[in-house]
Image (cartoon, rainbow, N blue to C red; front, side, top):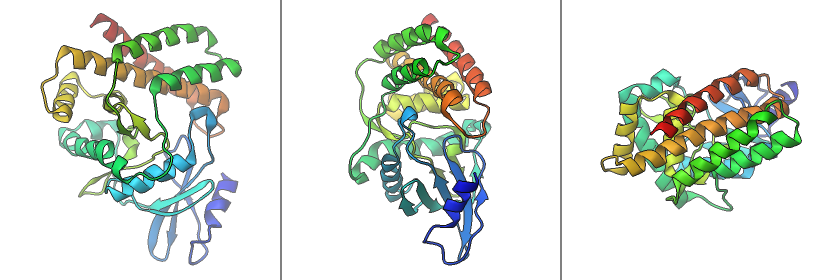
Length: 291
């Protein structure tokens, strides 16, 4: 933390000496709030994380494109291992905030702009986020790291393969791919979407499934979300493909946490996070198999 703080404080963009203050909530980066010349900024400090397929060039490109389409704060500075963006004064959402109907109605247009508009502004190389590849790669990382979860991997990989078959062919959009509640900030006028670490081309079903699974949407809310997003009634085929991707979202979060248990140096209880997400996945997968 001290090295990251020194790095944030030493950036050439500041007009005077600054005192970066830790910003809670990050489980991939170390984040600070910096005040300079009467304005506030967020400084995100973090290198590439190959075990999580996080490449900072991709995060920067996605952040700049998201700024241009008006859904994410402005990028003010970037250098290796550091990204500086505007600080948004507002409410950082929790799960209960995302579930509120009035907020869901505001979130969905933001998601559509992410999916459809960011590709028109994106520059340079871009990544694809295919959740089933990510899960397979995580399994290899867990095997190489002699994870405590090795005995569970064959079962999880078999489930992943079954879900990939159920998803079938996909439409491709530009996904955020990490729709945790804390990545939404409401400034009272609009909702902002932040943290583009995992951004990349993907099926829209992954973000929709992640929005539901990460925030505890009810089945009725899920049907509303799908009907509103696709502009048509939800048939059984769409519901099954969506349900498969929602399960995959939970499985990815579970294996992400398993990998973080052995590779992350951040102060976070990954063991508890693994247990929580594994339980969510198993409940969702049981429901999927019964459908």
